Length: 155
Image (cartoon, rainbow, N blue to C red; front, top):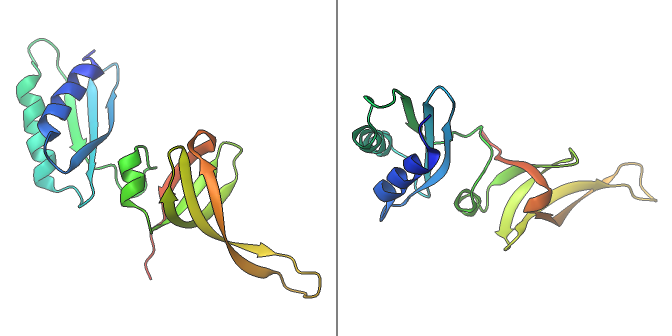
């Protein structure tokens, strides 16, 4: 099996000085290699092709055969690295806690150990039949987050 650290070194060298960053590198026992990159400005097909070529040039198929895929993580994938959180400040997100609670709101700030989002919650009022809605700031520590995804709005 090809060592993930070797791939990581090649990718880091290729991305140095560019607006691209590594999101994840997956290598399974059958040497299926998947490299996910992202950027604050988006990832182009050329970015993926260039990185794919660099990996092909630096890995030896004669020693070990492999399959290679280089792409951006996609909109449906959870956020994994701090740069992804940073680039999505101001967007609507869904946070699922390790206890299974689901929260939706706007990502407004990052802290050193978590995130702050504005979410609209319903609060029961003693004098009214219908619950009121309020916007509150909720802090989440990264240690208590199971996953965070960007919500796609078609409005």
